[in-house]
Length: 231
Image (tube, rainbow, N blue to C red; front, side, top):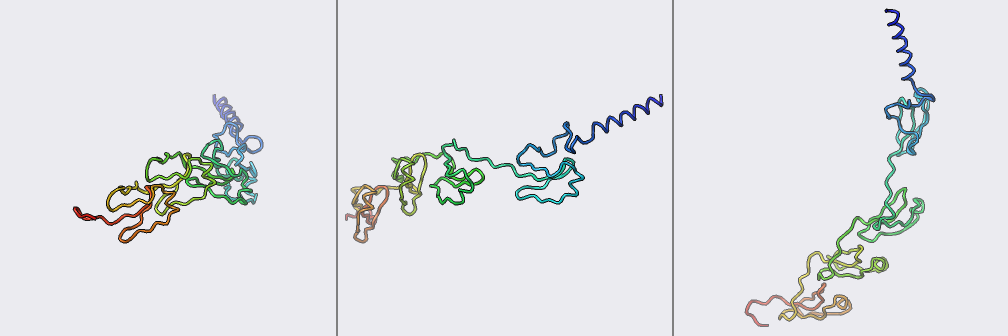
């Protein structure tokens, strides 16, 4: 019985050495736990699959690659590749797919688009769908409702207004709803109700009246009169 036990232990030892040893070539065994960097991954570069040889090799990884080493061998591994903006997305506009060409191109994105660039190329990306400014709102002024035409138009918004570019078109938005001076009141005189025409007019108001110009039009407005006081 003792002889059989010794034979069994010897056989187990041999089987264990055969099953646990490294696979041919020094790489990880096919049945391993998957902790070794995958040599088929384009971001993985093995310098050697032999751990002992790795201790004798002097090499450096090029940033942003990082060194790795262990039972699998040694080499360099790069970061996960960045996902490229989808050219099929209507909010993505590629200027070039060539990173080298991108360094030579001078272009600007139309707000609210944002610049993007990298290994995928460069261009402009819309941060997301936006609600169309209400054209009936007196604080909203459309320059054009054609976004393609908007890329060709050069315009500026009045101080305090916000410029908008989106699928709806382009124009200017006042920070708060504009309260139009009530026409016909004793201290309000409209010269024009057309904001575009107002930009062409030279309007002078007699003090203490002051000039007003907004989405409602332009004209002169005087100080508030005391209640019961006739002008």
